[in-house]
Length: 422
Image (cartoon, rainbow, N blue to C red; front, top):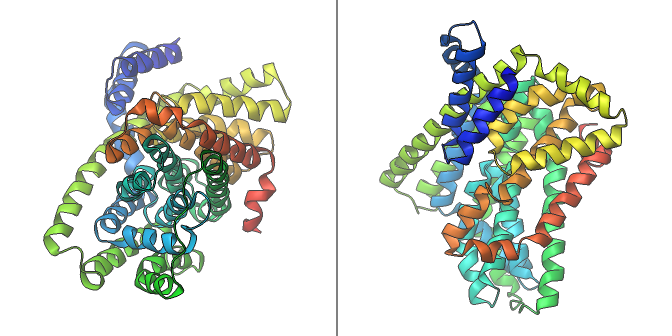
């Protein structure tokens, strides 16, 4: 009864537009007051201890690195280079959006930062070239989902902390799924653009392409330093986040000179506000998850699923459906904290490794970023592109099909994505 009360209060709060952090915290607090004999101070204790983790420090630093790179000219140079080399193919500008998002994802680890950085430049550019504005925004929103799959991924950091899974292994395993998502979106974009007859850009002279590549060398080098340092054992993922901040600041201020010290200060202040919101959300989500563990929800869920089926294929299908539905209404960060300790024991009992399940969970919840009513990527794309939401939704379905197809590959053919772990 306590668990039912917890979730009823939670979803009622969301339905009346209570901010997600307050909805989680309020539901947890009320449930403790009504059904638990423990003092409500325990909620505060769980909220604090949930943030008391060294790997969790990577989150604000990766967010800051992405913000600096977006404002400091790094994102624009990645886009210029992609336009020179692939802009002339059918659906070339759509492919540019996707490839640029993949590079930016390897810097920021954030979906919304990727959509904002790439969409602010590319949605107007695609519109000038004859692409429907709603299609451009839908493509940008879906390409932005790569930001939380390709390492460094903030949700994978959170999953690793919650489940004591190696963040380095999760990062390594996230490379192939991120590339597959990018390829799926580009294939969908190719056929849509071919059917609609969108014009191709003119091929760029080799001299201009090489010049763009040379100017972008510092931007391209960024993910090499960050990810190469992690996998070579030079620094941990948390230390890599600090390296990313220092590197992006030096390149933006001293090399490209598109950001001065005042601009750097404003970026740090804005990121601090975002981090405060994120930390508040993470702490209360930790308390919510802790209460579920105290009530043995993982064990009850396992018994319930085994009562329905012991078929591994059907079980994974049910988990995917549940996660896709949850992703439609709850942000991926609190969902990861709450659901990881509940569903991981169920997955492991069916022979699924923690790394594979981390990818399944993250990709499912990532799709929620582009599905209404939550779909925060959709709102960011609509804002930066000045597009009506209904125009985006009308053009969304080819990319959703591509995302779900990749999800099925990750779920039922784990060797395709985890072979890189050796």
